Length: 226
Figure 1 (tube, rainbow, N blue to C red):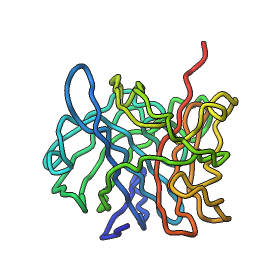
Figure 2 (cartoon, rainbow, N blue to C red):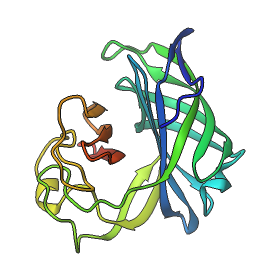
Figure 3 (cartoon, helix red, strand yellow):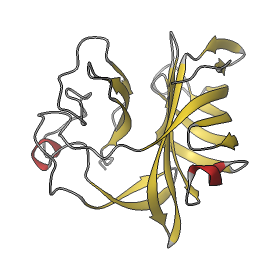
Figure 4 (cartoon, helix red, strand yellow):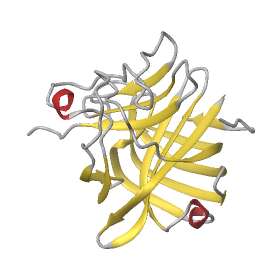
């Protein structure tokens, strides 16, 4: 992970971001080929995550692009507070590094409050292809043979991609959103302090590094109930 002057500003109060990571994987939305992108960045007091779909084939195609999200919901949040609107600007992006900025507003701190906070950030981050999970991040079971076509809403767009989910079918049937317990690359059990995460009733974003050095980031969601 890289940290080059990255910061997060909420209502004018600025705080540093120590690390940022942008992961991507090929996807299709409305018959358009593109990349499903997940940004995760954290600092001493904050954790930011954003998931968007951007047309393109390789990370270099993200350079100088913009992604606008309206009513982002659980796809974008900071410190557990969901964005209501967000503009993500990509600067120079290559296969290893990206510089980007964002501007948006998040919901108020108090439950039910109509107040909004203005958020801005400049982030320098590592760029990595999304990990193909090999083991369930809850029980450690092998995910061999569980790859399939997955469809989900990302940044207000319906996106499809083919890959195994990081949770096996048995664990996926269990209620609730649970932070990762095991590394999806080696099934190693995470120790205290190896999992950074934030959640609300609809989504859980995480960045984890196991004792074997595997770092994974992701966003787990569940459908809203009527």
